[in-house]
Image (cartoon, rainbow, N blue to C red; front, side):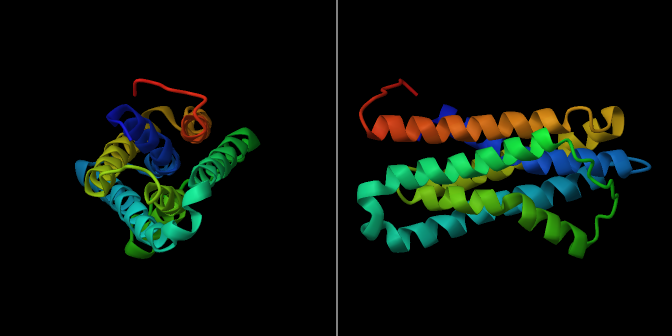
Length: 190
């Protein structure tokens, strides 16, 4: 997996966390560096942890599904992406909550990183430097989540649905690219 692909994947995965961070920023009376780091740390940490867990789960079954691993990657990324697009199109308002306690953030971090667990499973079937990938995904999510808190405090939820839509499209396109390359129908330089 190239740096460009990993960057797109990291951005796509972080869009759920970004959207929740925007809502957190909207609800906060005052946004501080500490608050942005707390939100970024929770979301970035779990976005890094979950692909690693998924990788090891996928590696346990790799020998059984090597002949159709490209289809697994395509389906998982497609399902995750479609879910993000559906959520973006639903236009439902999320309740803005400024709470940053452990219980609240743990639930949100897990909820926004389940898709990263599924992506980690696909890592077991691709040529990926796992340590670099999880650190890169975690750092990208940290930055975007911290920025989301600030953006939420300034702009509100104006860009939430657009971020989720973009994330969903990116994941579907990456899954399609993996499938087409494996089938020999596409060769790209990145």
